[in-house]
Length: 499
Image (tube, rainbow, N blue to C red; front, top):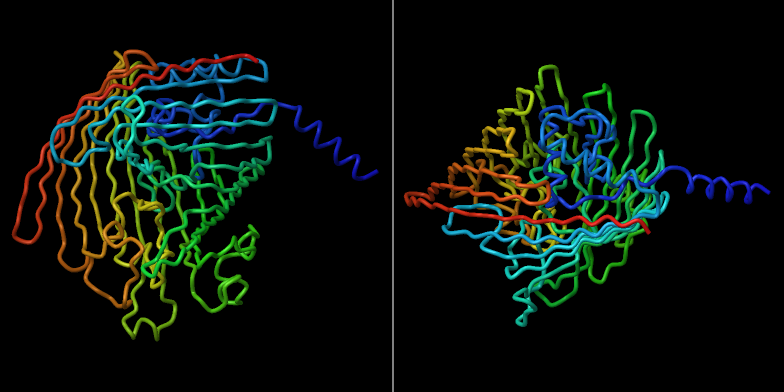
């Protein structure tokens, strides 16, 4: 009898409400508009430190509230079209992106053409989505990791399924399985914990909601790669985080992420329990490989607050290694940590908005790396966190101006110093000794960059952008100046179908 009652309750729950939990790819304009709007306080109630942003977040919970800025109005109009339909409902979202670039200064993407296809299906509390990208260049996007082929189709020789998820969601739980990425932290692509600039991976994700609390857990497969001796090393990732909302306009989160590997190692059941931390499995030898030290964890805390007068303050701190014992410190063993602080001040007009922002990032010399080579926080040759890697610090300041004529202007200046032990240069290479060194380490590279970017959203699904970047690089006594010009066109045509 009890089993029957539980079955009927589950069946009733699946028929109540609609699913709003589909993760949206970062390249689509609703995600871009939503993340920029948080600086202005727009739709702040949908913000979270445990992303990716889902469909409900980017379209606005209250779709009937008056929106004056076009970045918010476009999202709400799209949300009305989608949510007013009865389930089951289906959307196919083809897109075309073309970017022309000349010069060597750093910008996202190269000279490329790409086609994309995002589709999603909702049926009551169940959902499914898939996101496919193909391009004539294997570095078209910052998180693009295909294996290029010699042959091409319509000029495209690099492609991958970036996202493919099946899920269930209701008011207190969300469960999904498939390919995608977790994005943990205040930002999208510049998080110290997990960023959208990482490669996607297949994983199982669980998220629980209760009043002001939410708990997230995931466990996934990163990659299988061969070591220097030709042995196959299988790499996995797991993470758990607890988020608390102390006030309407604030978030605090703490948690950990772990990477473990081994020769032909299977998924470790010791990491499957969402409530047991990494250190307990490691110290009490509950892993399926004993005394091999083939796992590594980072612990983190992050916050994001919006104060009166559109003043936003966010920050993160990561502990990869922290020496609690005085003996270790006396032996010269350093801490391996990372810090991030961001401050943004905005002014809102009737149809325009201005934002000034500044950010400081510092990632330690040994952070995200390990004495065991394949426990570094990277996958498919991309960092899981900051795209700049490790062993660096960077100051960033800028201005973003949203004009009423569907125009957005952004200017940014950054100064970065990078050491010779950067994760991007030494991926899957262990450090031989763990001692204090100057930060950044060794021979450093100093880089200054100034960039300008103008976007005209001719329609919500059709925008044209132009930009210029100037970069000055100093390595020892050598200096170089690089410049880049680029033009970009994005066309996305969502087609909503009622099944």
